[in-house]
Length: 469
Image: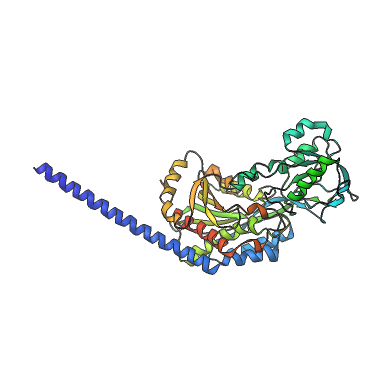
């Protein structure tokens, strides 16, 4: 009987413990839910990120690494970080390669029996060479892949090679579509230059049919002389393919690009020192440089102002972080990753530990959630921590799932922290990516604010609770 009473008593204590624990959990979840609501309320009411983005994309404008506009963007964002409650703000030096576009490109079909002489909408690709003053002309050869180039080999000597593999529209995820065709832009010009082609044309990396060409980087191997390389609009790519099918087609190209050598530049960093675990860093970031057309509003002005606003929001709501919160505006993501490589090297040399790093480099559209990556040794631990916040974040229609993080924060993977990427709705992103159309009027203030709030919410939860033992 005594043993029975003891068991009943123990069961009663256990039930009371479970009830109290559940009540405590409910109370904590309520507190967190209310705080996340405050983050969203503040971001949506104030929309300060949009004001910063307007100045960055429209007053300063495009800001390719090494350019005067890029230096203006460094100064502007440094000043903003210096006024929003950061403990420390600094510019981290790096060395960038400055490629200069020069005067607008001229690309024309010459004396074709169907259209006569007709202008082609084109933009030189990053690292492209300029033509002689009088331009160049030659017969166009259409290909679909680098493998096809290798098969044609010496037959491409003296030709203008046209890569025309389209954006794979059947993919739901547009970044997958982009990945399925971008190799021809990045590596195509180098491949044809090895076989003596005099120039290269590449179909723009977009699923939308229009007359807007998309620039982007091309990489030439050491020892391979760069050739003129240009992206042409999707409409013109379709037409050019039709013209080639009817009759041998001649193209005239005039570009004014040049390499202006190595230049000093800077990533801009601001942080709020942690009160309890200052040696654990939670970073947010985007890249400050953009291509030299448009205003770089979605790519990646949005990511920069998202990241700055994370620190702004938490400070305005009087949140005192346990860990060090750091905003990093990386330099030179578009044409070399110099800023991210330098940041990771300096961080490793200083034996820092980034518990987490969130990159925003997918535009300022409505956020759907986050994708994440980590070293396999710590992946399970981090996934367990993230799963606890699923319900809290779902109230704001945010999901967290495995996937990539970003080119800049990816440099920190050796530190074995959690790497994340903000994932906005991407269906329209490649309408604007690397184009003249990437300006402030393509960004909605509410959608932009939702991105800042989403990042600030996850930073708050990771800082308050950590990511497991």
